[in-house]
Amino acid sequence: MSELTVDLQNVVDGPGVPTESLFQSWAQAAWLGPDPSEVTIRIVGIDESQALNHQFRGKDKPTNVLSFPFEAPAGITVPLAGDLVICAPVVEDEARDQCKEPATHWAHMVVHGMLHLQGYDHIDDEGAEAMEALEIRLLAQFGFGNPYTAEETVKDS
Image (cartoon, helix red, strand yellow):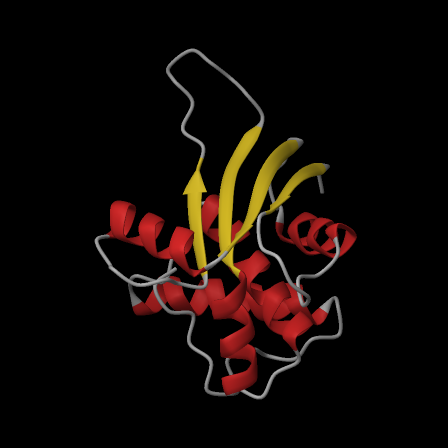
């Protein structure tokens, strides 16, 4: 496992956002790349999440996590995985609605987003099954149960 640097940008006021060290642990566990890399995790509110989701995905509503893989120009090698944008109010609402500990859901969003940065997706059943199995295994390292046994669906990510 290679080292992953996390640049945390929290632009949300209020309690409930996990510590930087937790984000580092969760993202590091989900970094499967052979080389060191860096990820920016930006914690945002409803307005920024909705604007980004609309601009980049054509969906005019906030979402839990957006993943933006870094695409280096030809001939440039920079150790950047990309950016994750996580909407704190959506994550907190989903955790409450799904009767989950907030930290469990935050960890799931980080792991889910990190896997997207590495090319995993859930567009078809086969990809979804592989991605979900990996998420379950990675989250178990932190003592978290299967996030898919409850009502959870990772929507719009």
